[in-house]
Length: 459
Image (tube, rainbow, N blue to C red; front, side):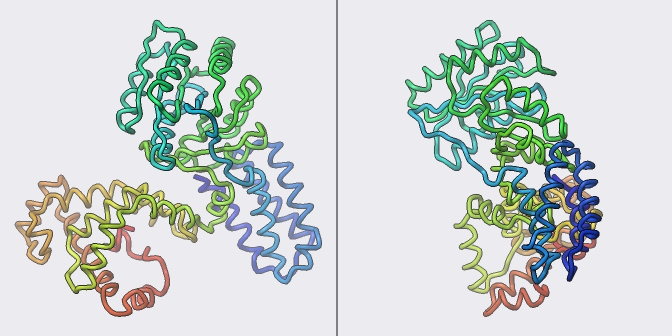
């Protein structure tokens, strides 16, 4: 997300960082570039105007002009104002109520609402240790009810059954009554979507809202619709007392106009963003961290939190002990590292959060993808236990068999073995005395992105 905006702003602000002096002329030139970048990112015009005016006012203030590094001070102003546009901080969900806490989901058809219900249920179970029940009031599309039932099973949430001949208000009320009997912490009510906003839809969702009085009313919107997303959110906000927004399909949106427009137009915070199709692909929306990504400074904090939550500490400690004892790093260990990476959302998600990724050529980034992870794992799975322990025995006929078994080519097997050898050398350094320091010196303190296409590490 934000790729094009990040690229434009990055190059514009880079020229400013080294400026010893800030004048009205170079501020005007910079802001012209920033304005174009925002408009190209499909940010709503009123948002762009107000943002530019605020930055200009602060840029010509004493804090910037008298700063020892005025260029950097101006970059900080842009950073701060971007954060302010998107809402300062993540307010989180307000679940402080007598259980069950009720969350009502609204949105247009195709925005990813039902999937977001499942993602939110999983997030509440894993992060907040809440028991969750989900129910669908979409009586117009039986497939939507079936989809929610399937997803509920996937995320281990309770499912309240409903049918197309029932009244949506009754379904919602009955689901909450059942949740009370089952001592469930949170109930998420999915509602019907339409291809466009209409009176019938608004009347129905208002009736459901009045009947169940939810603590959270979240609007799900497709970020790829740009500033139209903000306008749709406003229409719903005028009809319903929304408490927040879930921005879906953020991984497919290179512009980011919706994220920068919604808070300003609706006055409601973005609470979460969907960053993939899997039920684990939901992130809390932290404006300061998102801006850090836009300006090419990465989001290491989110990456560390993700690692702490999803990495298997026991297996990591086991590997550390194994390396310390001088036992070799084998292909079973390599496969485990690939699986850990998948748990953290895959390579793409990790790279997005690393500082300086905007400077990596697109051709290099495109070679590093999550399909490659799956291919590597399939190759390792096609090996015998002996081959995984002793990769040196994998020669001609074995390579042919492994390639056939994994549906890949012999050159793919060769590439994996080359990548594994490089990883093995790194792990050997880590296992030796003062290993981490040696490893960092060997890498020159840089992230090992070199040579990805030619057999370098896949991450």
